[in-house]
Length: 197
Image (tube, rainbow, N blue to C red; front, side, top):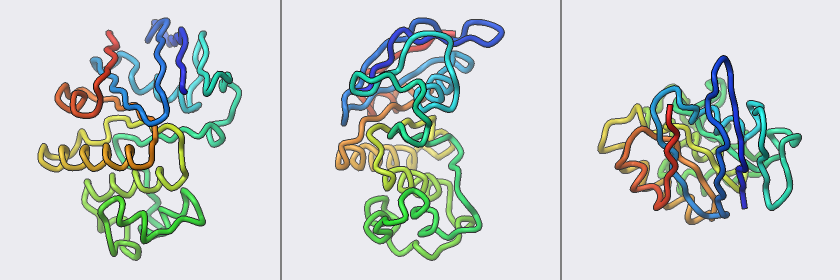
């Protein structure tokens, strides 16, 4: 279980204050709110990329504030996929886990036969699928998704969202989706949190 307890963060002003929620392994949660409400920063705090002012983030009852990002078992997919252009598709997947069965992962993310393709040959949707695949092979307990579908057209966005939901369910990975899209939030999870500016 991932527990966010009374977490607060401020820069020149308070970004969010006393945020609390829990999410079980395999459960999905959506976070909504206007630009500047701290949605992305909250995800960065959870995975250890940013610090926070007060509160605690616990994994199975253990405070992970001092745990390095790479040892938390929490993955993060950004709005713009972070891919390595000097590696082919298969090489990008193996960055997540050098023992990964590339063929199996490519099947799971609906990119069969793409292993030797160059990253710059991929469409926007294919690039996000690859980012998802690389995150999945690292076997995270929880995956944080920072508006990964927002730059895609509506048809592709819905398809990729549905495929992502199925894959997360298949792997029993808990997940948090940040989105501005009410319909997307509804499709992704039964529960959602609204951060206000």
